[in-house]
Length: 172
Image 1 (cartoon, rainbow, N blue to C red):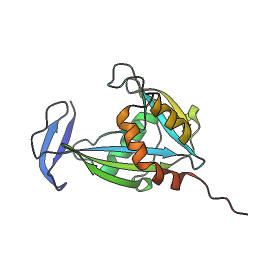
Image 2 (image 1 turned 60 degrees about the vertical axis):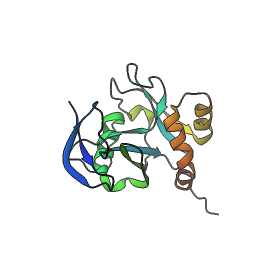
Image 3 (image 1 turned 90 degrees about the horizontal axis):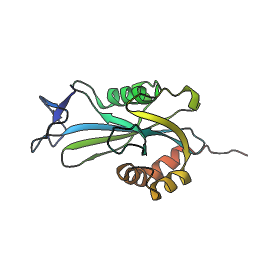
């Protein structure tokens, strides 16, 4: 059983918790974190959602809900490690933007890492494959439905910010 902190509309902790999988009440908000791992050479790390999960078989970036008592940066460090085996210190994550929808605050991060695919440790039941994808491949995957629509919309909104960070500047 997983519990999440409840925030108010101004993102202040209320001191109450929410049981995952139950409906949110009006004025209650949770926190979800996502991270784009990039290699600095024009690629993003994607994982495929395992069978039995919602959107099974589609590709995404790492992320998930913050657990009760976790800060946003603690949650993203935990989620990335759980889903890929990649360890990162909380201060290594760069916040790209924050959004709020009807019941959730979303924090979107990026992290520069060059990790060989053979070093990725997938979480059984969560993810079943991993790849480094170029920006062009990500666009193709969105067009062909290989990336779930929510992640595709997120990528399009954050693509410019990610491109600025992801390509090494060449010196003459």
